[in-house]
Image (cartoon, rainbow, N blue to C red; front, side, top):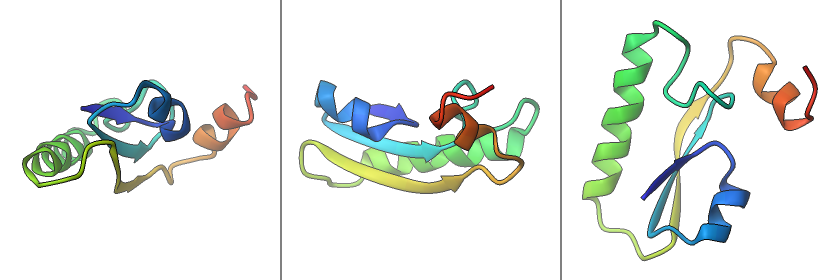
Length: 79
């Protein structure tokens, strides 16, 4: 099982299950100190792991970064 922010790269390693979290790199579980989001992401991952999915499934957990444009800048490889 994998938690990823870059599913197109993670698919290459062929994990049995991939959970997608659209947060910036380095902040997979959420912003520093945001314990509510950390817990929500972990709960969603654990819940997804207990569900039945075909091997190689990629599940978008629905978490998206809306604090600023950090994720978009990272994806464009900007500072």
